[in-house]
Figure 1 (spheres, one colour):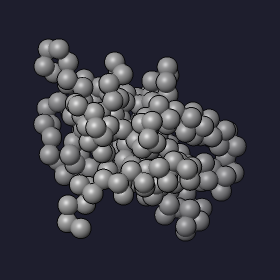
Figure 2 (tube, one colour):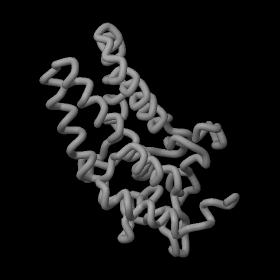
Figure 3 (cartoon, one colour):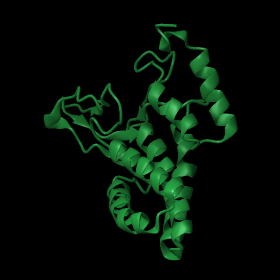
Length: 200
């Protein structure tokens, strides 16, 4: 993740950081409403979004990525293959942060009056938001990732990969990519898990 704690030789691209960069730049542009700045940055932001789109699995509209594609440490490790290498999985953090980017890109296109782009980004926004429930546990919080075979990583009480993924869940609430009911169930789970706050 962000602190560079992984094995660089096996890393995929830093996709979630790319999405986070789009979120931050979009917020600056939406606040300032400077036309020249929007014209300058929007094509670069589109390029970043198109790059992320290349990882979308059209069968489920989730994003299939390899090791270290998440935003913050600990680095996402990927999916251990039978030969000992690490392959790709569906990473919740990327869906969440990229959806936050799409939410803001849609508002930028409304501001810029770019109808064609607006239509395309509203489509991306819709299919991404509709894909999120696949990444939720029955209790209504996000797993860290799902292996292509269906194994969920980051489910409390599960024998293997039984933990609570703090970053993706906090971001989903803070970035307002989920509805109020899901935000409440995430918050409830964080509150019910004191180990996530080891220093009070």
